[in-house]
Image (cartoon, rainbow, N blue to C red; front, top):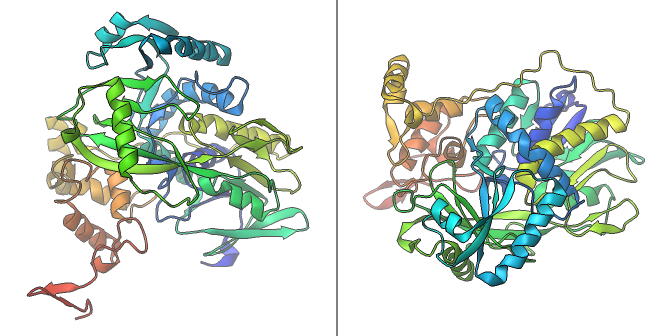
Length: 502
């Protein structure tokens, strides 16, 4: 890259849902903005591996930033999904008490929701819960119903927000890892990365589990530490387990507990557990973790079967605490949303764990407020367009619409992923989208290809060929998720591996 071209007003570190929503919100103003991410694609960390739930807001500690951002963020998702065209469903959610001993904590949760200003809550009887969800544990004693709960496609929301930001002038840099700050005294003038320097007036730290390390590089909050909290999940085959509800257990001090939830894609997701680990890259799936999840899921829905499991995954949450400028911790493990003390030009968005997905659009609005409070004169971008249309999804179209699409582009008549009915036309469209998909996982997250029973066993070779053809590179350069995850290493003939240059 040419260093002279990398002059910005704002650089956002981290292309997850928090950073992407902030980029989109700031693109409403006349600012030159860069969004950088260390991965081969945006949204590949916490956003790509979570429960996909839009929380009502009855769980966070009253008065905390989590509670405020949750309740402010929740109602924004309806308009966002309409403007950005991603999958979203406000179907409500339930916290299910099993046995009379959980009723007291259920009522406490209800009262927390009232304090937080959550609308549309009520405690329903066991009979009513069994009527609404026949698969629920017969020992249910009551449930807290919150009508504002929902589910979304978190990666779909992430890519949609980032694409809309790009449409409005934001520049996205992938495979770009933050390595340090450029400073003049206590004033930040930019950042250094493995791809060169980025000069700017403001840096927004939305680096997820690494947000503490970013702020420490500026000498800010040395007492603040993020510990990765790993959560493991099952995905169930929709042909074997069909359910439309979002079911939580009564929470404990360790977290919201093992959730059994429907997804916008029709599958049931089970998880997560919550294990604090030292290695922020350790996304291992463990036997004890799987056993813990299955036991928790069966407490809510005893009839689920292991034979319906089609995939396992794990993800990291940024578990930290939020000191005030004086160093006193007001709320353990709260969000940190601040202009950093002691330096000029840094905004920290740190410790953004659950309900971070729900809160992301509200956090983006808070970033704008912080900049204004700091004296930044934000002039509206007269060309800002809030609308981003998604590419066609073949499986969701009527037969007539499918026929028309194939007539316009025959590539939509070639089904590559049979489980999810994803066509070559869809894959090619994503490769040439505003933030091009350049890896298998990039195609997978955008189209849902490879998520059925075969888990990509049939489609992967064809996808590698399509990516190589459209990107104009060798198939040996195509990866699952970036450098180091190449699919192909050599040509084979008669069972012997030959050098790929032969």
